[in-house]
Image 1: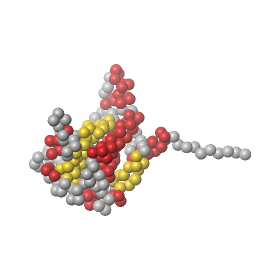
Image 2: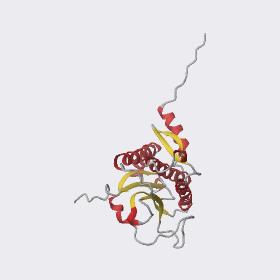
Image 3: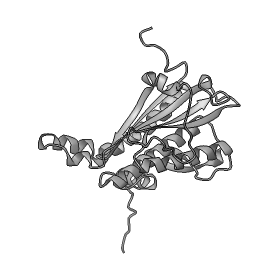
Image 4: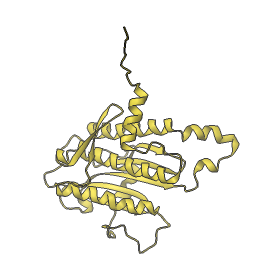
Length: 248
């Protein structure tokens, strides 16, 4: 009489499967896989923020399980006009990513019209690029340390930490619902190498005061993820929460 057994996947196998449903399997092999990862992590983070803030209807998102989290990811095509604006703006911003022109990308929420005095909060992502790969330029003394720093395990851990930190911060500090007449803008801050006449598709040059850069020094850092080719840092500013002078 023969017997059979059901092989239960390990936690690591489950995580790897979930990872591959959102991100490239490997992100340290070359620049292309790295920048693809950074763009997809940006999309996941912005989707998480908008969902946690109840900004868009449920049907604007797809469901993904990831590291014990039930994520909601913005669809590329949304019936809701504001959700479609954010989804399309992300896609257009990614064209500037491919040219290594994006230094910072900010998702801003306003109480009413998108003018500086109406800004209530923003979530900004800062990027750096190294086309040659840090791992190719390190000396032997630091090689082991950098190998751990850019390992897939380290990238996995920091990715999970960033997404969880964003969710926790919004849950803890953003108690107020968005106003009924809220609006959203996406802002790109370009690298120094960007041609002066360049604008990402769909974006236009901003004029007047910049409330984002004026308050960035008080924004809370919620995580950073680094590969040999790219780094992404997430920061959040909420009016009345993160603009308090710690010395005052």
